[in-house]
Amino acid sequence: MSSEMEKPLAKLKDIDGFVAVGAFTSQGEMVASLSTSSTKLEEIGALANDVLLKAQKATDIMGVGRGQMVHIEAPKAHVLARCLNEETDFSTSTTGRAHVHMILVLEQETNLGLAKMRLSSVIQEMAPFFR
Image (cartoon, rainbow, N blue to C red; front, side, top):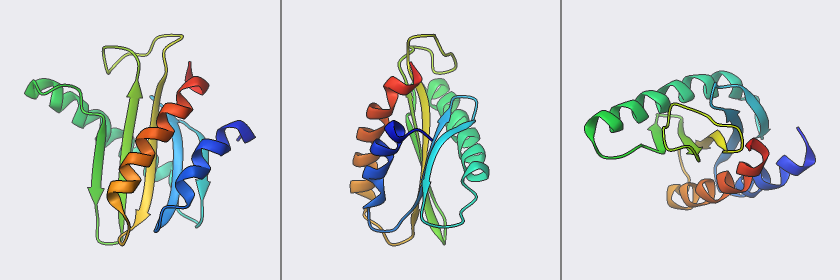
């Protein structure tokens, strides 16, 4: 991972309960990550990416607008999957327009509000790497 991509990701590391974060292409390929454990982030990311894409299709069908974030609460962790797609159609990617997915894994005891706000900010900082 380039040191340039490490800087935005590192802003998530100081959230209480931080476990791991990864930046993924819209196809689910991990391009950058940061972890404090042996978490299988690539595997978690691929599964969370699928959930995110299905949620986006569902919110489109519901007529409520494109969903941008999925929060999975499990007994041992929280998994936040966030999409930033500068294209108007969530299912497409266009050269020159960022389309990045980020997966953030947190321990059960954490500040979810702070984590969601920080993730939304960091994904904006990651966008130039995906244009």
